[in-house]
Amino acid sequence: MPLLEVKNLSVSFDTPRGELQAVRDVSFSLGEGEILAIAGESGCGKSVLCKAITRLLPDTARIKGGSVTIDGLTLSSLPERKVQKLRGKLFSMVFQDAMSALNPSLSIGAQIAGAVRVHSPRMKRAAVRARVLELLGLVGIGRAADMYALYPHNLSGGQRQRVVTAVALASGPRLLFADEPTTALDAGLQTQILDLLRDIRQSLGTSTVLISHDLGAVARAADRVAVMYAGKIVEIGTAEDIFYDPRHPYTWSLLLSLPSRAERGRQLRAIAGTPPTLIDPPAGDAFAPRNPWALEIDYEQAPPMFRVTDTHSAATWLLDPRAPKITPPFGGEGHA
Amino acid sequence: MPEILLDVRSLTHRYAITGKSTLTALDGVTFQIRRGEIFGLVGQSGSGKSTAARCIMNLLRPTGGKLLYKGVDLLDPKQRRANRKMLQTTRQLIFQDSGSSLNPRMTLAEIITEPMAIHRVKSPRGSMRAEAELRAKSVGLSPSCLDRFPPELSGGQRQRAAIARALCMEPELLIADEPVASLDVSVQAQILNLFRHLQERHGFSLLFIAHDMSAVRWLCSRVGVLCRGRLVEAAPVPELFENPLHPCTRALLSSVPLPDPRRERERQLEHFDADTLPSAGTLYEASPDHFVLKED
Image 1 (cartoon, each protein chain N blue to C red):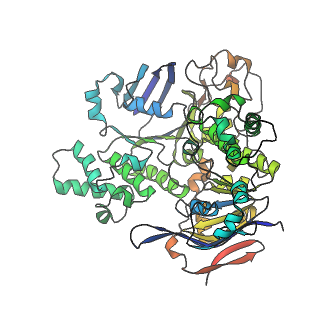
Image 2 (image 1 turned 180 degrees about the vertical axis):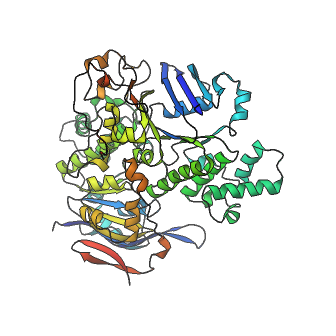
Image 3 (image 1 turned 30 degrees about the vertical axis):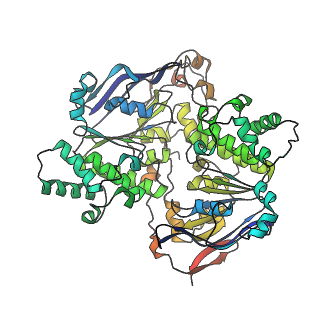
C-alpha cells in the first residue's frame, strides 16, 4: 500500500472575479521511501496542491472534492484538531525561504529543541539537547555543539536551509514536503541540499514530495516526477521516463527551453505565451494555445490520462491511437 | 581587437560593517569590456558581482582602483561633472527584481519613457506615447500593457518593461544584474532570446551578471569568474568551459545542474575552499586571451 494516496483532489479559491480552480482533479500516489518531484511553471498549482494535502490552505480556499490518504488515514475527513496532531509526526514541511521560516531572535538549537518538545513534551532537557545535536549532525551541520547557540543570521544560506530541514525532521516524520527548498540558493549549495534529501531517505527511509520548477534539481533528487500545468498533472512517470522518453508536449517544451540543451548561436526554444488564467479555464487541453503540436481536438475536449507503461502516463491526445503520427523531439533509450 | 569601452583596474570595495570592521567585497578586480561584446560575470552568491555593477554605475564609491569608461575616469568628480549627461544616458542598469525596481504607481508607458522625460530628450517618433509603443513592441510587449501598472503584470512582462526602459536612451553599456534569476524556465528562455536579439540589433555592450552557467555559456562571448571578491579567471566562453584552469572555476562548473538523471546522479561536486585563495596575486595570460589568477 502506498504511503500517500491523492485521489481526484480539486481545490478552488473564491476571488472577487470568480472561482479560481487552482488544482483540478489531481491523483497520484507515493510509495514508502520514494522521492516524488512535482515540476511546473509558477502558478501551475504545485504549492496549493502541497498545502491542500497538508491542510495548510488559507480560509479563502475550498477543497472541492477528492481524498488524501496518508498511511491508511483519510486525512481529508479528519477534523483540524486531529490533523494538527499528525503534522510533524506523520508528515512535515520544509519551507522555501529559510530566512523567514526561522525566528531571527532565537538560537538555532533552541528552535530545533522547540520542535522536538512540541511532539515529546515530557522529554528531559539533556535528552532534548542530545536529540538536537543528533538532528544537526543528520542534516550535515558539523561541530554541532558549537553551532547550537548560533542565530540564523550567523549562518550561510545553505546552513539555514539545513536547519529548516532539521526542524522538519525533529519529530521523525515519515513523509516530508519540500516546497522549492533550493530556489534561493546558488548552484553548489542547491546540489548539497538535494543530496541531503537523498541522504535522509537513505538513513531514515523518509518519503519526500519535492516541489521545484528547476528540472536540473528534479533530475538530481527525484525517483519519480509529476509535471503539472494549469492545475493538472499532465504527465507522471519515473525520472527516466520523464527525462529520456517524455510524451507530453508540455514536458517537451520545458526540456527544450533549457539553455543547457541549446547550442550556442541558436535561438532558445522558449514556450510562447503565458499559462492560462484558472478563472474559467479554457475548454479542452489548457496547454493547446501554446502547443506547437496541438491537434484540433485539444481545443474542444480535455485529454484523459493515457497509459504509456506501468510507471508512465501522460494526458495528451497524441497518445490516442487515432492521433496522427508526429516525430517527437525526444525519445529512445539513452537519449540525452 | 575592438575598442575597449570599459576598463576596470584593480577595483576594490570595502563595506563598513560596524566600527572599524569592514567586509572586502571586491579586491583588486581587473577586467575590460569591449565595444559590442557580451561579457558575463559569474560567481557564487556573495562573490561581489552586484557590488561590481554598482561601482561601475557610480551607485557606490569604490575604496580603490580605477574605472575608465570611454576614456572618462568615473571616479574623478571633475571629469564626471564635465561628462554628466553622456555618463547618465549611455550607461543603463537592469535590476534582478523587476517587482521592486519599477514604480508601482506609474503606468508602463510612463516607466518606459521616463529616462527621456528626465533628460528632456524629444522622441523622434513625435510623441512619448508613440515612443513607448515602439519600445514596447521591440521587447515583445503588447501595446495594451502600456496603460497598466507593474503589479498587474507577470514577472516576464515586467522584466521586458525594464529592458525597454533601459534601451530607450540607446545605451552603449548595458548592465544586467541577474535579469532572469527570478523567472520561470520558459520565460527565462524568452528573455535570454530577447537579450541576444536586441544586442545584435543595437550593438551595445552588455555586462551580464549571472550565477546560471548554462545561460552564460549560451549568451556571452567572454566571461570573468569572481571568487570572494577576486577575479580568478577571465576567458572567451568556449575556452573557459572547455579548459577551466582555476579550481574555483572548476568548482563553479561542477555545480551546474543537468536535466539528465543518470548523468546528474554521477555528477560530483568539486569543492573549493575560498580561504586557500592567495592574499596577493596577479592575472597572467595562460593562453591567448585566457587569464588566470596566480599567486605572486
